[in-house]
Length: 385
Ligand code: HEC
Image (spheres, rainbow, N blue to C red):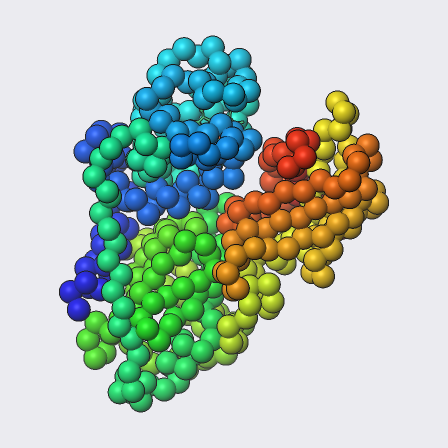
């Protein structure tokens, strides 16, 4: 009993601390106390696409960051840095790291890492996470989150059968507003054992009856602000229940009533690749075009790739291929693809990446990367087909 309650309290407390200004200063005390889950999530979401952290891991398009805070800027052996980093001649400190990560081009002009738009309240946990995970400090393990299990028993189920059926047999979809006017959706499954899972990688949650009348749940590691929230309600079936429509909305952050998360239900528990369970990602991918500008022998070759629902890839330029996902059934977390027929390239170009990176796709997104065969490219999302 105590454990779940504490976990919920922790989640609620985290939401409150997130805004306090002096808690964001990069002092050792603040860094040690920073929320490890928030830090890891930020890393996964914004950095892991291009960097590894642990000893001996390979460079991706950015260098491996092992022991970053014990060394000078631009000195990971074997990585081909820009002159800006190569010649910087100074040590990494938490403050300089925070500045660089938020504004790489301003802080080290001529640097080749693109700007990544991290929410301000995520910087401190990110710095702390990178310091720990890169082996730069040997602080105690961060606080362990306690997510006890419990669950649905016969008595509870009998008390409000419709409510429980809705939550335990179907899928709950949350739609969260974003600063840019767009929305982010994720789907979760309330499970009978008291856990909540979802196909947003890393998401954790629990639900409990706080007392006979209050059903409470806490979600952590949500991909976007507010990142975690706790919510309580009476376990009663909603009167206007129906699949695919907004049933209700609520404000997860105290004092910010205008910030409303919408709740709707999807029928059953579809596989992530069916039924648009990652509503934004797949619809978006199948309806837009990924334009690749691929370096081939010093020239740039443009391919407008269309990822299709039947797992093929086609393009007006004639290049074609296929894609697949990897990971446990229903919780796939990697996507791989290969394309043949790129002018000037013998054989295929292929690549795998973490699916979590693509959960908030948008037209105009542009990023550099490299195929396994060594060809570097820029990709950009173009509206439509
Ligand atoms: C699109 C790829 C990409 C993403 C995303 C990215 N980086 Fe980088 N990063 C690079 C590249 C490329 C460099 C090398 C820059 C240069 O040489 O000018 C770099 C360099 C760095 C360095 C300097 C390393 C050293 O050895 O001195 C740090 C620190 C760093 N990145 C941290 C981060 C963090 C933290 C994030 C996430 C918030 C992030 N990067 C996201 C590509 C990326």
